[in-house]
Image (cartoon, rainbow, N blue to C red; front, side, top):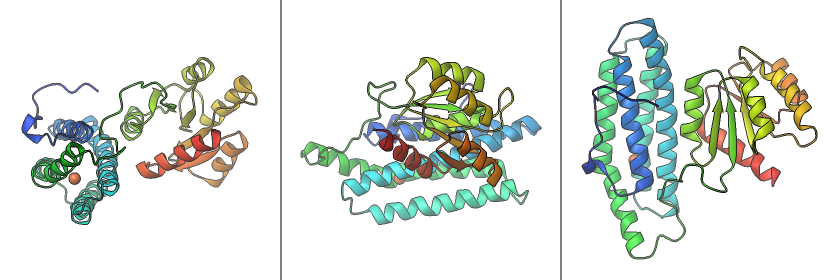
Length: 280
Ligand SMILES: [Fe+2]
């Protein structure tokens, strides 16, 4: 994503906790704070929509990032896990309360919220995450880290499973990319183009929206059956529209699972892992 102009907050080396995986996620949080700040500078409908989309992306990413840190703490028997997790939980609650106020038109001051986000993230890194960084680096120095991975996966790493996400919302596609960093995620806003990709690429799983302009998700499934026959690529529907009729129709056309938007990152990851494990 292009992030231009003067930044509200910039990454500095002193924020590094010396764990590449966590540092890169902290950088992404800073990018999101800048995006939110940019969106709340104008009072236009487009800027409000941009703010709404970015806030949703930020909430999903914060939760994903915390889950990565908490997994790392659990795997390494970090004794301050409970305390650290409490900081995360309280922050998420505060963010969700603010987002609910924003969505419901209650008292919400965008600028104040963005400053709160920035200040919380920077002080959390400097006081709480830095200790985790020191602990992990010490384990590593003493050869006690075992097989716990602390590196961000390289893009297009050989052997990564390929996920094709089809949705006419750019924001939703960005969210998939930010959540599913363990996979090689290809995104497509046009279902017709996505069918071409399904014909020509070795895709492991498809995430499919239902309401799209040039072809509905149900029609996509019908075309997909025609092109792939018995060896159909597993498809998980990810839709804001979850009537029983639609769920049934998509299952009848070959979809294997259904997720209702807004997407809960851990649920999405679990469902994909389950389907990929079944395939192998
Ligand atoms: Fe943390």
